[in-house]
Amino acid sequence: MSKFQPFSFADVEEFLDFLTEEERKIVRVLRSLIQDCLPEAREKLAYNVPFYYRNRRLAYIWPASVPWGGFKQEGVALGFCYGYLLDNSENYLLGDANKQIRYFIFRQVSDIDQDLVRAYLLEAMEVDGQFSKAGKKVKNNPNLLS
Image (cartoon, rainbow, N blue to C red):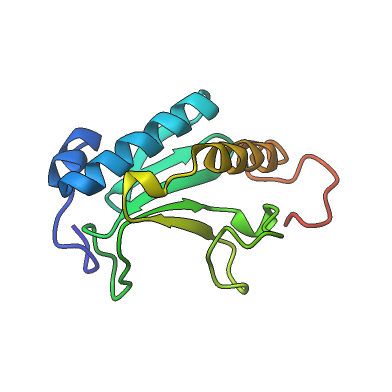
């Protein structure tokens, strides 16, 4: 437990059991998309929600019923940890322009454009491929931090 969250989940199944029915449905669809698109990614609970890792943190799934400090949202967020490096020219992703994370918010399963989510997941994997496991830049990309 932390000062930001009054509980701690032992595993993903316990996390899923905690969610509302609609959040659970959304999370299951998103997990399935992530597993299909990023089969090499490792799933691990961090901050009581699933994060996905390869060389670095790629993405996370954060339902509204899992609070974090004073941050409030509705629905389920699918966040990209290096979202600022993703193509967001169509403004599909939300997020503060001064921060590195970008995300979608889904309030129901029908909100999920699976083709669009797949495209962003694959692009996130490409960005992640530019980092070594130690987090150092391995390809010459001026947008990436060393």
